[in-house]
Image 1 (cartoon, rainbow, N blue to C red):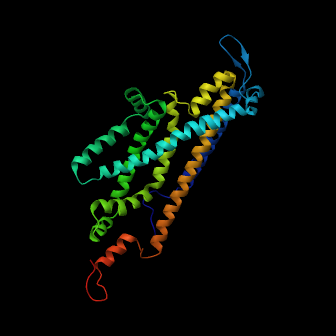
Image 2: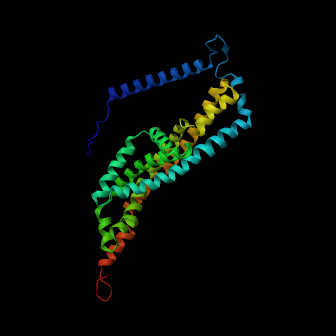
Length: 307
């Protein structure tokens, strides 16, 4: 008879209580959505007692037929602004993360301790302050200030994830690499790091989703990304009566891109976990390092041992 040590199976009273709580929460959520709908649909009265139609009035949505608006949102805002900054910052963040992880796991304390201090500093510093610091001190311009701030901050997070992945590997991986004649640096690059990167890939992709969302902080340093284009420049051009429309469009675009990246992270996590399960079920795994170490100590046909 198996016993669950985490929690007991809920009884009739607990199930009934859970059902009642679920029903109440669903009703409250539905009432909140109804209240939000009628609040947005109600006419607006300005400070000068001028009444304007509600947010769902067709006059606020006729802008959807304007191709110039979509060009500004999707091309200038999303493609040339947000994705351009996110792509460059993501590549640099991965590079910084690799460097930070290797420095953080170095044998020399003169490298390891300063790297730990830098990682804690960058992870504790808000991204916006980092962008402003780079912009004011180095006068890089809004684009490179945003890229550098995102790359350094997210690189520190990725570096810690990779360090955790390297330290979670069995010690036999490193010992096997050293046994076949690899140097400690070669062992780290060719054996430990590829496995740690694959193991932490879902976390890294999830962090890149955060990086993409954090590009909206470049709004403060006047970089023309999606949020700046949609909620500052377009309302100035077309009028504030379309502000809610632009807000909704920007929200949908952000959700679409981020949900796509989140789906990719789930697919990668699923395939990674499936690969681990297949390795467990398949018996002995023929992996380069362990196989090479095995042949390095096995006697050959003439009776002499390998190199």
